[in-house]
Amino acid sequence: MKTLFHWFISALAILMAAYIVPGVTVTLISSLIAAVVLGALNLFIRPIILIIALPINILTLGLFSLVVNALLVMLAAYLVPGFTIAGFWPAFFFAFALTVINWVFHFWSRPI
Image 1: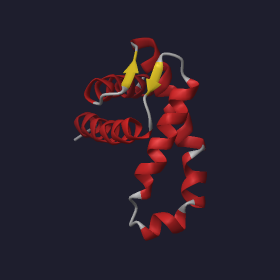
Image 2: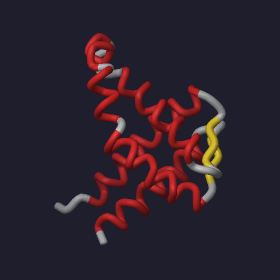
Image 3: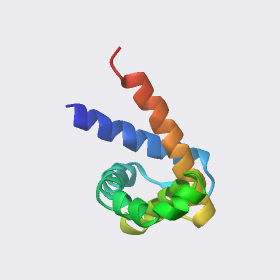
C-alpha cells in the first residue's frame, strides 16, 4: 500500500511540475507511467552515471547532479508517450521543480 501511495504522489508531483514549467506537457496516464519510468531510471541508471561523473560532480560541488537529473528526465520523456519536453532547459527546470515538490510531499507524509 505504501508503494502505491508513493507512486501516486510521484505522478501528482510530475503533473504539478509540468504545470509549473513551460515547455513540458504530460497527460494523467503518461504521468503515472512516467513516475514508474523515472523511478526505474533513478534506481538503475542514475547511480552508474553519478559514479562515472564523480570527478565533474566533485569539481562543481554537486551541481552536476542537476544536469544528470535533467538528462534522466529527457530520457524518460523519450521513453514515455504523451510526456514531452521541449529541450534541455525545460528538462532542467522540470527536474528541479520535481525534486522540490517530491521533497515537500515526502516531508508531509513522513511519520512523526
